[in-house]
Structure formats: structure tokens, C-alpha cells
Image (cartoon, rainbow, N blue to C red; front, side):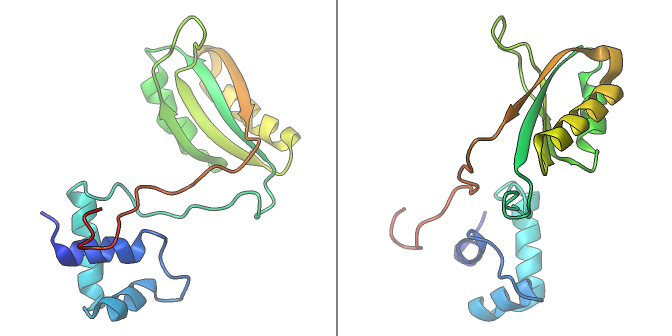
Length: 163
């Protein structure tokens, strides 16, 4: 079970790690514990499922990627579990996952986010995915982002406030 120090660690990191050369050391200093304890506790929280992941959340627009498209694919059910990880491993795919279809309106079961500097680049990436999935694909589309949405997870309130 996470304890009060784990909660303090989550609160100290939930808005992001410090943008410094040694972020875990900085957090350790702030909490008054050794850096290796910060790392061990975060690892235990990940292993125990209290944290889902620790990762980078880039702002693609600020990096020059203006055509951010969720490619959606209608992949044969017998092949989607094999092809999904291959699509997800492509260097231009930021995330990829399988979802249930919602027929008849929504036939797609594989989603892969691509980021291009323009739509032509994003569409070229979609063509590369199409080549990889081949005949298992029965249909596809690209849904382009029109605005930046909140990119944060759950936020804890201050300890002791009952949040």
C-alpha cells in the first residue's frame, strides 16, 4: 500500500519531472530522502499499478508537427494482435492501440497516432502503415487534430485536505 511518502512523491511529480539534468536528485532533495529511494518508490508504484507510466508528453505543435492524425484501421480480427505491435513499433507512431468496433458506424479496431509537419507527411506515414498491414486492412481513415487537448492524468490534492 502506498504510504504518505509515496503520496508526497506523486504530488511532487504529477505535474512533470523537473527539467534539470538530475530530476530525481532534485525531487529527493525536495522531499528530504535519498535519490535511490525516489527511484525505488517510483518503481514500486509502477510495479504495483498505482502509477501507469512515467513518460514524456511532447507538445507536437511547438516541435513543428502541425498535422497530427489518428490513423484508424479496420484490420482482420485474426491478424490485429500480430499487426498492432508492428505498427506501434514504427518510429513515427507515438501510440497505437486496439479498440472494439462500433458497427455499423465505426468499423475500425486499430488506432495509430502519427505526427507530420504537414498533411502530406502524415499521409505518407499512413501509406507506410498500409504497406505493413497489407491485405488484412479492410478500410482506413485519418482523423486530424484541430486543437490541443489536456495532456494530463489524475491530479491529487494536497495531503490531508480530503481530496
